[in-house]
Image 1 (spheres, rainbow, N blue to C red):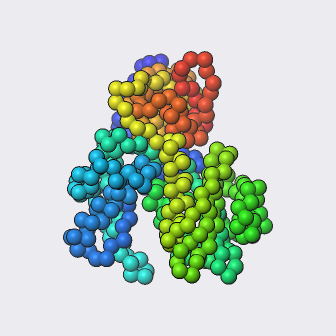
Image 2: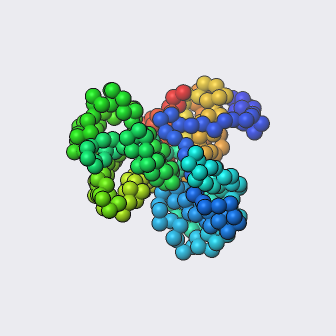
Image 3: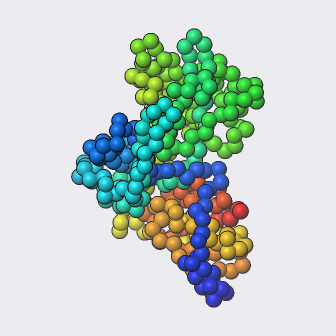
Length: 346
């Protein structure tokens, strides 16, 4: 049977295996950024390259303060060496944006050298209900509040948090009224969110004042417990950023890992049952390899639908389990030994 495994593994070196997107989760553009620019000059480009790298560092760590780390300041003065490419985008209103793509491996090495946390790119999606008031209460949607809606989308994108907005159709209207959302009614919010499946839940309310300031509140349902943050912001954009930051910081605290070479027993044995074809094997291996905390993956044994892997990771066992189980196809199986055991659901 080991001979069959050798043949199977050798195929992975020549087969083009597509990246696997976890069911129910989202792979976000962590290592790309969008920066608004005033022109296409060289000086503007250099400034945008630094701003873009700061965005990427924020998304990759989950911490908006990461770009201010003293150990990163020298690298931020030469962001072009981490840049893979860029392109300009012009909106229908004439606004100019620069899209920048950075080298994932180089950015991860930078973060690791600075002893900052690295947050996996496979992140749970957050469903957001947001209601505003001026002369009446209404949900923030593309139709009702297009500018505020755009700022919310941009804020979550800049922090690498996958955002889902409700449909706000008749079914949603029957399940949750603007008044219930304004009261941040827990039961109504949870009930209205069930149709969207297993999503994290964030709710907010905001009042835009005549001087441009915004007063409001965000509530995030984190593992069954509501986390509340009252916000007095200087602008709508600042208020949206506060909501995205609340989610990003909580999730990064749970899933981000700090590389600590030599300080951990990094060898793990992982057993997966339910692999019934080469495609299953390739998907399992590709998913494990894609985890930032995992530095080495090698299959060691195959018997029937069971595969045993040896992993090395810059993470302790509990944190590694959390990262793997973000992909719901890995269903944990109890065992008496220290191995990580899973059933693979296709």
